[in-house]
Image (cartoon, rainbow, N blue to C red; front, side, top):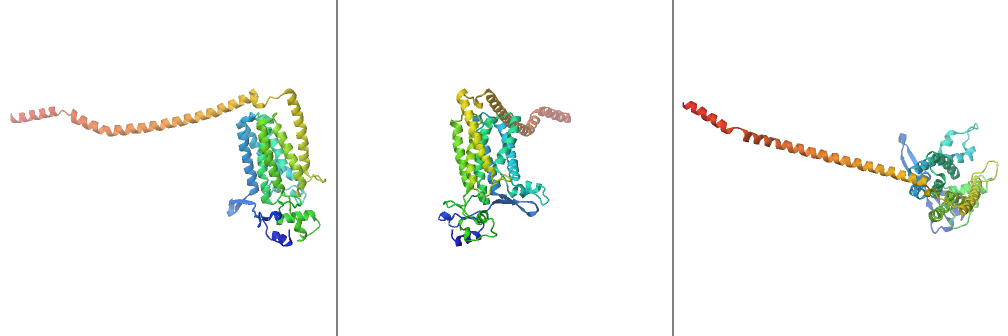
Length: 397
């Protein structure tokens, strides 16, 4: 970057530039972390951020996908949805708690106490994916035991769904201009006024202001993009694997934590905004990611050897799974029958009312004609004529 270009970047906030491929975006990409606003109390407007929207949208797609795959894993969709919904709540709580624990000084008051208001102010940012996974496992696991959902195949669904959610959710970091990495000269390196500020002081912590000449190198790795790409590739691979190569229940989840952990380990090494274990130079996410990789390899190897020796029966092949799926299908069919019967009774009732109205209308119109006919036909005209004749005869006599 030239000095003139650095000055242009610093003078245009909320614009992301790609200085090494400026032919693609010569004027950069203007972004706004607010997706849209809605009317709120006292004439104010509530801002809905891209970050929150993308996380919610990713969750929705994950739920839709999980619901479409329940039968292939031998699970009852109704029970799975109970687990998923509680797991989502637990994921949000866990993601926030994880971030707060490893960034505690930010949430302490001047007196040294914990600021509950700051902790609960989730709209100000601060979620950690590993905390979300832990929270989802705890909350979802409890509900799975209560609802008698087999946990290993449920974990397989969860792993695939998490990859979808993480792939989309990471793009919220793009709109927030965060989760970028160290300096790079790669064609896709990005910079902006906020990136220059953060990255410059990361490399020059003793400086009190940005020196334009030294800021020319502040072009960062788009770590959010690396992780998003890693997740979508992982989802495609594990989705295909789950269809044709799965060897035991829970295998997909083991492969998920291994795949994501491996990617997160090297991506986290590039980041300059990581959370650290207090009192150590160790990045929390790197330690957790490395542990997940080792754990998944050990457990997968043990299970693979066991399956090769003794064989394996998938849950969807068991009598329990077939019985629960049959029960679910019967419940769905019963609801459908009740709905059809209710619709049929309603139609019959409506037709009956129409028929009654027609009969009433016909009877009302016919009655005067019958009365008129009876009057004209039943009146004893001859008798009346005889009486008149007798009267006339009497008068003549």
